[in-house]
Image 1 (cartoon, rainbow over the protein chains, first blue to last red):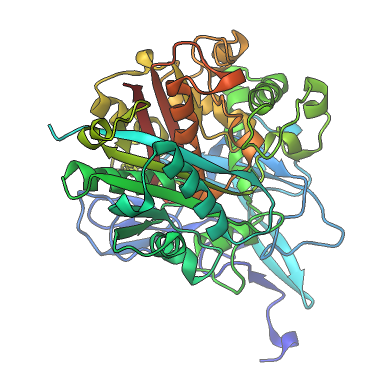
Image 2 (cartoon, helix red, strand yellow):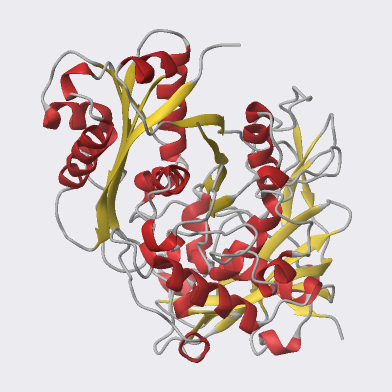
Length: 147
Length: 394
């Protein structure tokens, strides 16, 4: 397949999230026996020490959560981060998902700074371009404060 | 109960960016520890080496590498790796050997040479490796430190001045430490004026990576008494515990915590020192001083709480009251901590024990803690390695 036949947007990491912008969500897995969630979902054996299951279902994780904490990156990270030139700083949040009882990290949506958020704030998942390479946009999930 | 194990010698190579082979630092530290213990190398029955991951094969078999460099004489060896907790695991291995009666006196050594600049993952496309994925997403080591620092601001009222004050305190502690890499006093203005790296953490509040080496000679109490060792420090307890599922700590290099949907949530870090205290038969209220892992200045506040010096959310008060300065109720990081040393991964947990040994012997000079009886270290290695050592004055 030549480059111009590729879809305009590709996932930055294959299989970690849905590519449907209208219903963006992370894809985790859930143990069919003890019901524990995992993200990323690539588990073969349940890590709950009282569960011996090796069967999992692929499940969408909650699209909404509360900010556990947040920070930003004011210096360009080392590779494999792919940076625009010049580097643009971005903010990051750790978000608590209530149903899954887990915390998931991710960048905050473009334009959001640490001054715009607070611990406990409600956010929702969006897709956004993480980097562009050879005319191709690669998407990842970001957290967007709920209006 | 099995027999007591004591430290009879400690030695270090100064931390810095010396650009030499890690073996040189390890041998330097080992010879210093042997001399301090007044033990001949040929009497050492067991060598526990801390592995280094950045120096090729000799680093993976550090126990043998150091033994060969000091001169083969048929001693037994082990090599341990547990990231930043490597030193404690090597110490635990040597102590077990002595407790089991298989050895009377052992050498524990860790040393590292680090590359310049940020620690970065290995090259290549590895989407199954969480450490690769998080860098691709722009989540670096300071990100994790900063998430905890920011949470303290929002939950417990920590301020930028608190974080800077820890750097100022530790710089003052380490100012006269001959083994520290950075021996410079800092003012609040200098720290607060340094560039923001990962809000709310600034450049001078995040630890560097260094070259360095540390070693201990440990022995059975009977052996130490027999050779007339006068400066013994008892190893009261060692903890190398792993997390419990579901671990609720946001940990490098993971993108997500364990899910507590079907299990209880645990704080791994708060569990680490507890095992060492229990083994020593003491509690945090007995502690005279502590060495903890200040990867960032703010993280020292978390460690006050993890090792039980105060309740959760009270770290800032302990700092502001001056309790954790030399001269205060329970001084923390009298060596200067990572703020003054920078991290030399397989040596760092041993360097903490070396400092406590000096203090409990009353040999810490300008930074001596008056009447130090009990010391504790708190530390953690990536991928689930707890590390805490309790030392007691004999």
